[in-house]
Length: 227
Image (cartoon, rainbow, N blue to C red; front, side, top):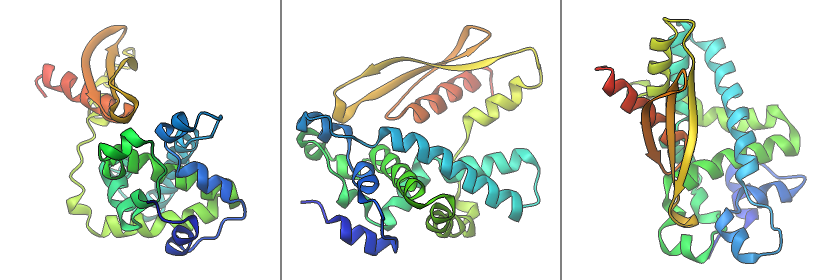
């Protein structure tokens, strides 16, 4: 039994002018597919939320950390990665509010990091769509600053950034990530990504989200390079 939308608004200290944005953020595709009447689900808002989160975090780091660009990039990647977003979302028990399909519910979707992290980004987008970037910033920054207080524990390795820095040493080289497949049912889908250097595959990765699959592809490429 999911908790009410009003409870979540009380928890995050934000009341929506248009609750539909929040409803969409909390609706997983597995639920929408079961209902079958063109119900909107959160993947589009997750896409937008990812961008909003990135600009908020980038702006904060730029104005508060006087370190080189490479260090800013690594810090940002550690904050916006799935693992960190899952931690942030669990602080507001976001999984308890999600609308999931029966299969997803039965296989632990309510606690699955990829689903929780995506819903958190969709929630950021919901606030942004409802009343703009400053409201989204007010919601996000307390999570970000708390995470940065424990900067040493941000152990996420941003394999994509490491690989990009290596490839950038040769400006004529071009790195591209390509989604080449999807496996499994909707409630346990896995994505397969190739990382390509000038159209040559140099690594392959698999993950529960496209972002994770890209990281795993970059990791494999680095391992093949002896890095």
